[in-house]
Amino acid sequence: MEKRAFIAVILSLLVLFLYQYLVDKNKKMPATKEVPQTEVTEPKKEGLEGMSREERILPETMSKMSLVKVQKITQKEEKEITVTTDLYTAVFTTRGAKLKSWKLQKYKDKIGKDAQNIDLVTGRKSEGYPLGLESSKPDLHDIREALFEVDKGSLSLKERGEQGSISFSWTSPHGIELIKKFTFSAGKYLVGLDVNISNLSDKDTKEDVALSWKTKLDPSKEVDSYSFSGPVALIDGNLEEVEIKKLDKDRAYSGTVKWAGYEDKYFMSSIIPKESRKVKLRMSKSSGDVVSVDIVEPIEPYPGGKMLHSYSLYLGPKDIDVLKSVGADLQKALNFGWFDIIAKPLLIFLKYINKGTHNFGLAIIVLTVVIKILFFPLTHTSYKSMKNMQKVQPLMLKLKKKYKDDKERLNKEIMALYRSHKVNPLGGCLPMILQIPVFFALYKALLGSIELRHAPFIFWINDLSAKDPYYITPIIMGASMFIQQKMTPTVGDPMQAKIMLLMPIVFTVMFLNFPSGLVIYWLVNNVLSIGQQFYINKYTA
Image 1 (cartoon, rainbow, N blue to C red):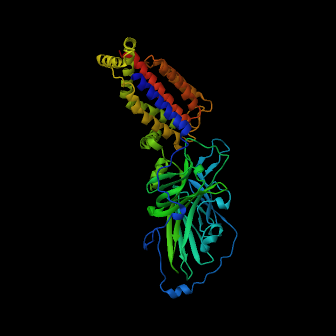
Image 2 (cartoon, rainbow, N blue to C red):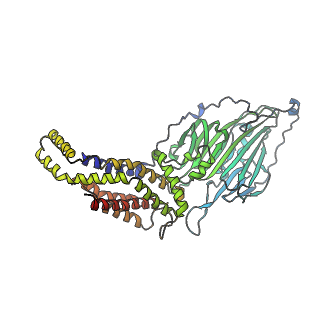
Image 3 (tube, rainbow, N blue to C red):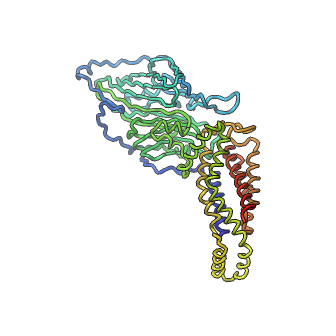
């Protein structure tokens, strides 16, 4: 029984690792209400005077509406507006009042002198720029490429807490005026966006307008199979992640959307409707490899009336502390799967340790030691049980020879042997099983943590999120596994011996391309286990 249980634990570890190594890229999407695009209906709107979501202001008299004269806006030259803060440099264009560039000041695309700031806008043509408004209805059909007026040519915010805004305005040939007001704050990745709609005509209007985040895919970019990249949203409390390959057909949803956008391993761009209101949501991919996430809302101001749609925009790193400070459950974008409930507290604790070490490599070592201390009683019990099992192996072999033709009698005699020697056949495996969730939670946390991105450790390891360039740590890690196995009591079973012999080889091969921070954790854990086993072998009878 001990042999079977022990092999089961080893195989479970191996299967879980292989699952992460080979199958993790085929993640299942969370169950979220999805409806065909043609069947999505918008709930009936009610007047919301005084609320930030939308307001309608009727003119004092209907006679004033008839005096409104719609004038055609003369096309002017396209302009660029630059917004600079301590965290990012943004470039907007007056064509469609879209975002042309959003470069993060504190994050580079690589390590080296030629490193460039990360740009969250990947489109290089107008149709691929995000934060534009789109409509298929005649009254606003031209809005996508319309030239907006802008109230200032640039904006610079350097002092923490300092705020500023830029407003873009445009009036359609049918008398619908749109004003997009962006509000920026130094020290924050969060941006306010108010879309004001005014009906300057004497006719009713009813349009569906989409605020869109667009991402141009780069076919030459290496795909990370261990993390998710693609459109994402939080709808009715459920996290919806859609893989790019599954966007062969447009996806449409209806519900309470807290936020929606696009994310990769380390960064995300999201649109956050204020008040988490019910909207239509559409995800699609064009033939030009442009992924679009659209929040669709109606505009229906009466003649002379106004409406307001308010949003927040988050364009920045997937840092758990920053995401939590934004609100709207944005931290759910940092998804560690099954182990989420354990992984996030471990990540927060790791960041806390780093405040003292100022080195995430050292912080990983300290965290590993702390976890090892917490689990010391369990692992100590496990090792002692395995050592006791080793002592009764000769007696078990005699029983197997004596009752080889009577399995029922053999099982009874073995159980009697366990009782007489006070040996628990599962004592060596159960403590190990209890530690598996914690190990894999930390594994997931280290694998997707932006804190390790470009974080140096010592000597040749200058990026804990990248593999060891010389494969030194994975080889040492494999050697430590081999030493640990040699010191661990075995039951003398040939099949188990073969499995244990393969484990260091299999793990070394898998860890060759794993982030060096994760390898350091596993290596330190092995070294501590060797020390613990040495103590048990020497001082435990």
